[in-house]
Image (cartoon, rainbow, N blue to C red):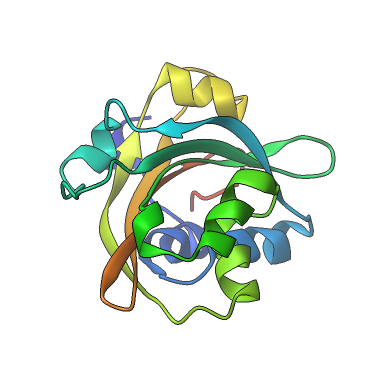
Length: 172
């Protein structure tokens, strides 16, 4: 299958076009509870390729957080690379990001943060490293989506999420 042959179904179109919580959508649609499987979290040294053109240099280096959202059977549904700007959010939320298995969308919801989320880019990708994290074949197509989350006029999160197209049945 070539990228110009990919035609998403309604769920696939919703994933790339919504600014709502994808975690909640996946949980409802697949009847699972997702939690964070932390892969890596540290002060950013090198910016991941899909985030690089959207990352604005700030006084402090952001924290780069790489995770998979997995269900109780440890099946990965989403792989995400997130830059979070700890100087722009409360210490409580920073601590939650470091210390819990709770996805960012749920942390935002639990803390009743008012925010604006903007879709900056989406597309299709084949990437063996990401495919490995998602437990799919290295040649499988995935959707990627880059979003910015703003709270009180400050960048809080820059997130790139990756979704396995075939496993999530996102094609027409």
